[in-house]
Length: 117
Image (cartoon, rainbow, N blue to C red):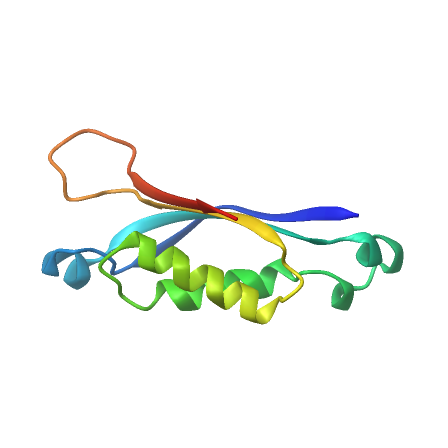
């Protein structure tokens, strides 16, 4: 049986961006991550060891967000790799990373990169 763990709207401060000012001053980012994994054992056992621990997944995401990158594409790639290294049973997912206050003279909710696999 297939299941999905969803981490939605996690807000973190980070220093990603092409411009030096972005890496110096930082910005607020919002990330949502959906991870597909085998859920049947956790449904039967009610045991944390049989599931994908979303608290640990948040810490993996937080750790990768702390490493400055120029491109959001690079950040989501690192997050995906780190999650897959920790949870090899993940067989699909989605990562959506939004920079909420980009240094662009326009009114918007943010700019984002999304990957699905």
